[in-house]
Length: 369
Image (cartoon, rainbow, N blue to C red):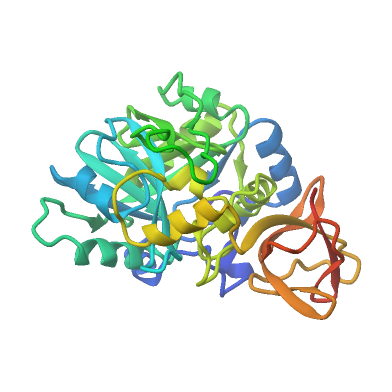
């Protein structure tokens, strides 16, 4: 999609951006993705009011075939995957031994292979962990990013747009309520905490209903035809800047951008979609259980409104959030939103009140209430 008229690549704007193919993937032919196609604010409005097609083909894709794959992934990650049926998706985390978030992946199961797509730059770390934990299990995890690409239909009309590719009736996400602290045993059903409908695409690959629309996994050699078909059906393209603005507005964090090395799932609202609180042991479970039972994680994810008066440039990820001369958190993703102006996701100490006067660099900030 970088060849579409008006496309401006992310890396041409920011050479250090996380949103570019990993070096090994770029060497294998994975191309840059577009930040925008000439009018990022209009592209945002399209994603929020109708539907647009976003190139997310820089994301890493790991295929896990093998007859023991679901039970094996169930033991290694935070999600309940033991009996994940074919044509269903979910989310998972890999935690450190101390319960800190290391990797996040979206999941799709097609009956023969479990597919994991993850943040650009995280493929090697996730695959390396899986390979180290293979032992004698009948699984064969491998990086298939050079051969498979992820696209996204984003917006309220995403399901209808997917129907033009021969996929109809994708169900809304099925999300379990997170139980309160010290909940009764057996109150969380033995199933993924969120279930995403997945359907096969006639051209190969699959479509997965998700929180922001419909993800499409296709072979790279058919990607061009899929894009052409969707555009011919009237679906406009939108860049990654527009996608990120929608994501921030929806308060969905990105691991590695809106998290740091100390982040635990409860601090960034990842327990609901990615952590099953009653499944068996996995790395980091003790921390997850202890923090949930206490009911007060040390930090929390917030949406900040930035005044945008002193500078028009959004702060970079990692910029400290200050209160009365002291750092009380850090900024993750900061964007220009077409309605809200400059906004950002930030992780701040739990005791920071919602009405606190905050500074991000020289910019005044307030927590969205």
